[in-house]
Image (cartoon, rainbow, N blue to C red):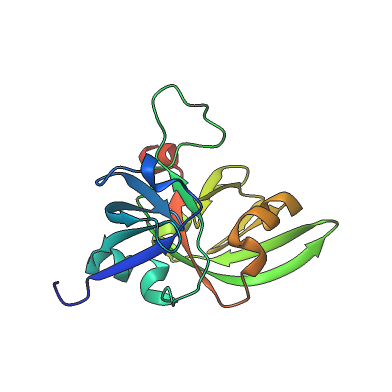
Length: 178
């Protein structure tokens, strides 16, 4: 492999018989291609991660150490329900978690993004963070906040996120072109 490229083996609860080699799976919001798969001793698939992707995502900032849990999402099929905003898995960069505050049963997360991304994030707009489609509550310069409800905290990796962590950011597709 080219220097800086990685191969990752990802354990999954997906039925690997339903995953084709060459399929795209978003891993913490990063669209990656399945290059191998297996079911022993548990279901898994392998992905190759280019040096460019490593440098632009939390793979390179935090690393994906063995045992780390990541969010997974299969690619949308034509005719599937659109339950959030449209995201492609093409990560634009990373944000740092700079605030965690309980708000009722939810948690307010505050993030700092590079100025090149901040201009695309709007109050009440959408953003994908680690592959999770979220609504932006407020924006102040290079920081913005979102509330994450208990269900999302329980069924994604958001319940494990800590201050200082870096998360993958994909700005809203429409915002990118408007």
